[in-house]
Image 1: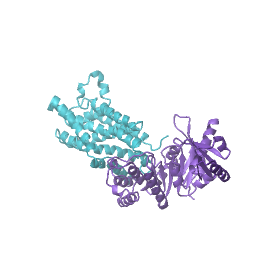
Image 2 (image 1 turned 120 degrees about the vertical axis):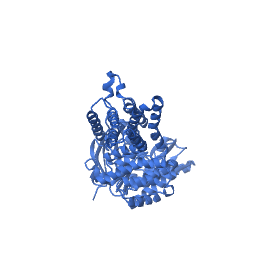
Image 3 (image 1 turned 180 degrees about the vertical axis):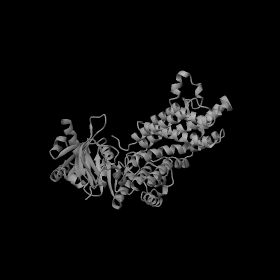
Image 4 (image 1 turned 45 degrees about the vertical axis):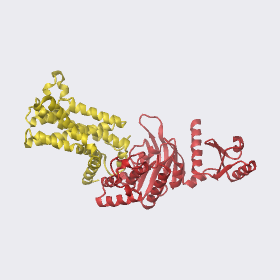
Length: 306
Length: 245
């Protein structure tokens, strides 16, 4: 079976720097679908994506895209992938139609095929009513959709999206999520970078969490959640001291409130105690955010101690 | 990609960067069209009709240099701001095709002014030799300055520097050297510097084709211009790598 996307001991040190932007990154996309590279700003996600899309040479290690080595077989890789760069912008006076149609022609499609695809993709991305409007007269969300339309219209086997919803409002973010999901069902696989936990949890079939250039965890959302010993979280705003809460589970401070991560028994006990004290608390299952913060915080502490 | 497909990609990208822009935004053409004629008018107003052959040759070369130098700002803009180059890297389009598309698009912007200037120069001497010289020199100046422009653009850290260096290159190649004025006006101790820029030799060749004699054998000027073009093209090809280290 062809390996869709795989990194083996990937390391990158930029010229003039001693810091490792990527430090021995290894993972494999287990099946077709959406793989998300999740990490904080500066974690190394874009560096990894630039190496995978043949824009940057690795210092050590290898990356395989669709079974091809990105260094030795870059030309073949380029024919089968497409990329949406981070914070790209369309050409101001050109229309969404101009962008998609001429981009496809430049990539080598014939006119009929380019026209058909441009029509389909603009309609799928609900850009058809703006097809003849210059990009500089469109909103930020629509402009981002033009770039996404360019990338998706290639029907490439693997598409790389670097922070596709960065700076967009919630409505536009959800619109783009739904487009990306639909594309994946119909045409090919997607590798996505994001620092949005909500985006990663909603879209991903497989998540690779990167922190300070290293993979700290990988798996499906459920697998990642299962890595945590805690199944529940309880947010407490008053009535308990940090010391008392620590006896129930792991305490983290979130925006001035105490959040306790705990197992089922601990959750029951703390909830009952809160009822007795007539203190309002909120109980919910742990989310990817809890996993992420737990992992990244631990990694941070380890880094600082070494 | 085979050769035909590569050529098609070059023309489509150049069309997208220039003609489509002009159609959608006519303002982008106005400066490039009028700039050489305002210089012509200024020289005519200052010195009368006897400087017209020099002024026309100078305006013709200046327009070509502007086309080549503009690539510095535009290529840097496409790469750093729009990130369009990143999208092209992950595609079957080669780096050389992309470079040529950028260069061709700048030439298309300048084409209306160039055609009028070419017709005006031919008024001084209408011959196949003059036409050949005008076209051959145009090709060499465009290729050399575009290659130099692209080479420089790969070192540009931000877009403002791109526009500034583009203007600076225009001054050094089309205003300071004896492109608009006779080389005989240059003091003897500065002659070596006057002969350095490729545009000096382009001007000597063009002037000769309309009957103004050159102090240097023409074969020297052709050789120097070709050598510059090949060197700048080699530099541009060396730097036109999709992948960074």
